[in-house]
Image (cartoon, helix red, strand yellow):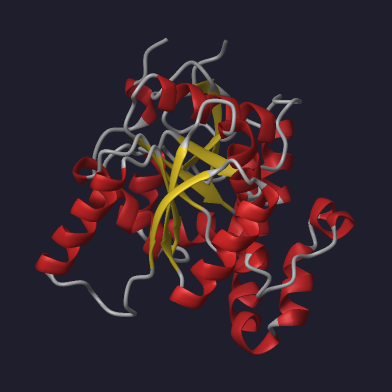
Length: 285
């Protein structure tokens, strides 16, 4: 196994949270997993009583991390940062992780629900609107009748007061949830998971973004062939041009250009575990 230096580009290294590996993509630790292995690792962590969170990441999020040290640190301290977009899958494969595959948020949610039926995993759903949550729960239970959804909460579209935040912490903890699914959109969901992690008893917090809307039947997913092509961004842009055109006008060329710079060794992208803190060179085998 190779150990990554703090300035390396896409050399694999052991993950600080476990024995599985990751690859440095523009200073963000992307886990070398596929849907099956990510599901297995999450199940194992829950069974062992670990308290972690999972970020489901695409190229847009990696680019955003370039100008947001706090967000980058949150990702680099996560149990897993799964490759949600094909560009990240290609980066993993380029680094030698041939078994890596896309771990798309909506697919991960279904996979964990399916796997959790055997051992009675308890799920709490946090985010979106009351209507979305009602439709989401109904559809999930139709697909997985044995699933244990022990609660849900649609937070207001504003900052919660300390009292409200304390109340929702108590509500989630009383539910006995093993996994909290967080659908607040990025970066809000990552910030929430990192901030609330120590206050929640649930083993795993997983941010899945638009998965709630997709599984509730409120948004259309790209066909599988488009998802695997790496052009899902174009499909989404066609569906929501007014909201997404500026994002993709910046993200696509930025990600491509920075990736080329990293691979050519023209610029280093060290992994920092803490904001302004330690780099990956501190890792040990």
